[in-house]
Image 1 (tube, helix red, strand yellow):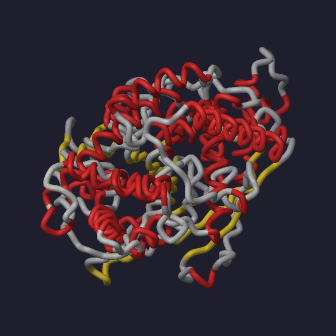
Image 2: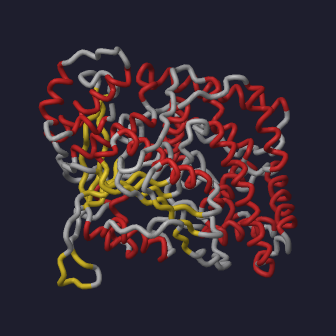
Length: 538
């Protein structure tokens, strides 16, 4: 039975009966379905008491914060409860192009930035940006920290003081001794997750993130959800659409994860590593086209040699004592997410090879003051992905698959392995991935946004999600690879998003947007980083 059936016209009577009724078939799925209905009903009655935000001194007065209570385990809704932190900026109801015209409020727009492990608490601030003002006029902008993140029953698997251990190496073809060292670290991290979180650890997964979203919907007083998920947020948004299709008003899936159960998550990460190799090539070709500015090579191959020369030098003498090959790779991996970082990364590499390590240290060094937040994000990422699905438990499978892949895609392959390897040694039970999908008429029309050369969530994932959600429309930004398109620099993409969210109007099938302009070379010492850029976030 679909969860949506619990919210019929006689919903309150049915809910009362289900609350008292035993779980006749003994299935956990039925108990979780009932528990979600119980938690949502409670949240609707309680609402959210919004007040000043804990860090209000850094936030505009229009932003208010509160919490919503959800069960740790939806099969036992009367058991242990956890609180999720929520932030909201009320709809301005002011037309940004005509201050005398009042705009009709359309409810709440709930956003998740991805991860797993990213917080959306600062999302309401986008309403201050020109690209978001029309949406901020019509919608309350709502962000939240998913379970495990930040103040929302936070997870930790390691002492944050020990989290940043730099400088580090980043071999593209690791030795057997290096592999053994990283295996030991992965085992220790998985063990740390189990020891620190205890029995609660098993309840941090994508299906519960989808259930939490329904409780948040109810707490906000929304009969139907308007939601935008980016990256990983598209995956549990798709789970939500499958579990609660009648609760959906409008949904935007920005940079979609491939939801095929066979892809979650081991094969998704293999695909991601392959895609980052293509994106790394795009970046090198761009640098080569600006050899007159950076002097790193006139071809992509020559640029790679410059990068490898820098990495070898950093292995011997880390820049500023902080930046080794691992930190270099991490900084350039972030440029694979966002091409607006290309000029700054290229400048840093060029300056370093010319004898000035300052820009590279500024961009690539890890900052101890950010260690606690970074470790929390990493812990949630690992917990969710490890809990979500079965993973190979035999190291030989990982070694075989990634050795083969690294022959053609060396840039990210092994670093991706080390990020995910704790899942091979995970101690808790695994979920069986839900077979995402809705039939004709089950779900209101939805909008999918995707860049054709996105590496973090390869384009095939958007095609697969589009195939599985009947009535969805896919908008493609051609020949570009920026990860996360909504509210960015492409007016065509933003126009489709606004038409959908403001008017419920979707483009025809196969809508394309031309590529955004390439970044211009601008030698600057530091790039404006985007929240959640790079690993471990999708």
